[in-house]
Every structure is written in C-alpha cells, then in structure tokens.
Image 1: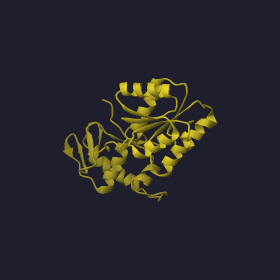
Image 2 (image 1 turned 30 degrees about the vertical axis):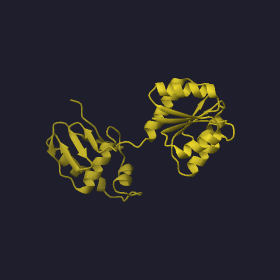
Image 3 (image 1 turned 30 degrees about the horizontal axis):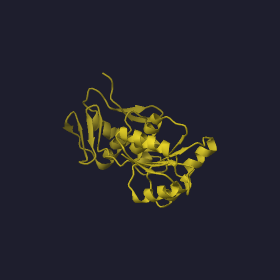
Image 4 (image 1 turned 60 degrees about the vertical axis):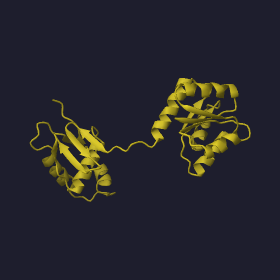
Length: 226
C-alpha cells in the first residue's frame, strides 16, 4: 500500500514513515500544505494521512480541493483538535476518518488499512454459495448438489438477491425495489408466484430446504441445520 503522510512535525513524520515501512507499506512525506497538495495531485496513493494544521496551507482545504476535483483517495485526518465539532468539520470537509493526537501507531495503522480495504477496487463477487446451492453471476447458471437448475431471468434475479443477503430477512419491499424495480406496491401476488416457482426448482426433492418464509417479515435463504 502506498501512503502519503502530510505532517509538519518532522520527528513525528519520520517515526510514522519508518513504522509504516516496517509494516510493509510504501510511505512518502510532505512537510507542509503546499507540498502536500502538490504530491496529492501528482502521485497515486492508496491512502493519505493529513495533518489538519499545516504551514502554508490548511489540511482540510487540501481535502476539500481533492473532493472538488473528484479525487476519492481515502483520507485519514490527524489533529490535536479533538472536540466533536472539530471531528465533524474534518469529516464534512471530505475526510474519511479522523484521529486525534496523541495516538497509538497500532490504531493509526488499523484505520489506514481499514480505509484501504473499504475503498480499494477489489474483485467483484461473481458467485454465491449457500450449502450445496451455487449461483454463478458470470455464466448465469445455478446448480444444486452439482445438478443444473434452469431458471427464468426474473427467477435468477430473485435468487441472486436472496443469496446476496443469505442469512438475513429480505422483505417484500426490498424484493419489489431490487428485483422488480418497483418503488410502490402493485398489490399483486407476483412475489408469491415467483417464490413458489423458485422453491419448486430449488428445494423440491431435497432433504433440506434452503428457501424459507419468515412469517410477517419476508423471506430468507439459509442452510437448514442437520
């Protein structure tokens, strides 16, 4: 991970850069606001650790400028200002997290790594599995216990949404909005009809059902305990 540290306290910055490198990351340092703003625009960083009070230019103004030009690089704001209003100002300026000084390096490292995980483009999940039921989004296929389960397009979308939220109750409203693109209740039994068809294809003849009705709440896909 490549990290930019914008910090005017040279001793603190030296320690932070050294510690981040020891943790296996690439760390670079800018000692004031102007150089920090320049490095942000010319470098490709995974995370920026931005001191709030800097010589030549305020740290929050740099963050605001980043967001204004569409730069979504995650920013951890560092500051000795730790009141609620100070933290709110930092987050509203575009900071993704706010850490007050003095801080423990282990906490800073954990926050930086969490920001990188949250925002780093990762592999899009292409398969969902619940028990012996497997849905492949790329090949648009469904199998249960290794046997193909042919589904109509709407049935596939319905199962995909249920499996994406496996173990959680999915309400009728959620299904109408995310599977049928309805933002109103059409007052029909369309969900019941499709769920019935899906059950007949997924659970019929199986020892353990995977599709469940949660009375008064909605539906759920989960593996039934033996």
